[in-house]
Image (cartoon, rainbow, N blue to C red; front, side, top):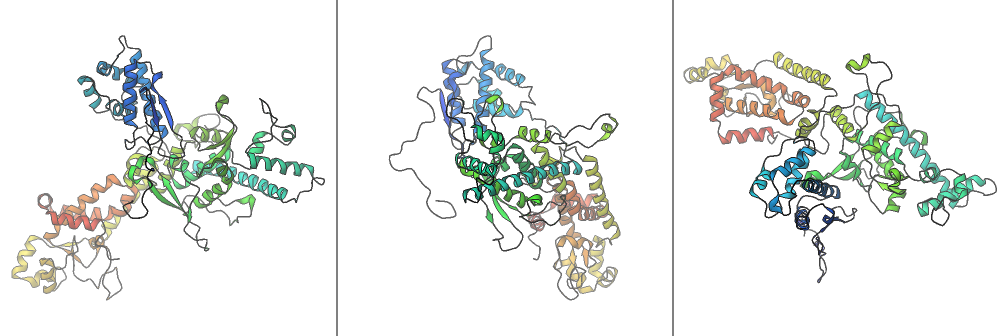
Length: 630
């Protein structure tokens, strides 16, 4: 039963015997993917160029590596792990004295495999995965086992470049044109099919339309065009007279160009990972309840690499700020299909792919008809998902020139065409919106934007401008009044003069020094007379605003809190984008830096080293916004 209650989990009936994952000969391993839509697959280790003993040894290690809960959940991950073992076996077979048992493996074998893969840095990821499998082998030599436990060289991530705003607009405009054409084509053919099925097309009046309706009916029912019986199964002549097989199948189903355009637009709008989009379901929940408000589809997404946090619900409703709103258009206007929001693109893809999902018995969003694989490797038929090769094929059919950057402006001839990939589309969305999608803000800053070189100079200028603007606010606003240690000493004998110096009365001064007025980093001398609330009403603003409030005063006992908050804001630079950090924290950080400079280095270091655990907890609660009045 789940932790949150509910019905008990289904269990096998009594007497059920689980099918063994390893064959009786120990040379085959059966892998069952976590996704029920993926078929089980058997990996044959008898084909590896190894001794029978090593074949069974590798098979046992692979079986342990792919068992439930071991981390490899998809067919692709298992296939990659097997491919690493296969290439390692090939290296072993070419050795002057090929090893016959696990104890014969030596570090040089692994080093040679790494060199064949392009070196330690290029093979970093594959090396780490291969080591995880080989560690499951029993009876390894101590030197080889030590080699497996060495730290794997960190892979150097290649810098990449996002698309500029103008480039992205060209890409998405081409995708919209293709999608609108697909919607017009499929909707009109479905309308013709419905008229034919209801007997509204007279065969004598328009035999072409009647034959067309008959052909569409066959395609819809059988998932293929009418064919002659026999070995070649050629399309019937009357069907050939009406067009090609591709024309007939894409009359009711999405084709490659249509599906690629949908995927391009979805990723460009949402910033979701390519694998997440490919696994997205067509089933969704309409949060707006069709009540006339903003249309909102709640879609359950799956990002495998996030392990326990892989599942999440995404709301497809908002319009990206960088996409211009089109003229008002309606659903029935086929020439202007609305594609101005992620919801519109998603819901249209759900609609146009419905027949293919029924034929495939799948709930996946991305479905399409393919004329076949390269060189006849795959027969024609309906498919799920597309890859970067499909996206690049789609882009090659359009005129998508790249912007002229730097020295490229002086080159003669036409500008180079854009290389459109799903990863660059996602990077561009992250760059333009500065918001994470299916990842944390730290990942956005350190894994995506840090490697992006597409708009680096412009981004630096924007961040510099934001920092200068916040620093300017700090300079123009009055500096916080801070009591010194000498003021505290004088207040014990002459409180009236000290109070007058800081615009207070003697009672307020006493309360400030004793900590009765504390608001984390300062003390508030008038909580009903500040600028952040109507006169006479209590202030409900964040304590962060106290740094620039005329009602705030600081005393020496506030210094540890100021140091801790200053350090915490500086630490947050690592987990936020520079632009967002500058917009949110540059002003208080500058104000705190000014306070610490006025306090002096020695008192600041003393406050930093002697800060108590209670003070640290208060600052943590403050930065987590647990003290905000809502």
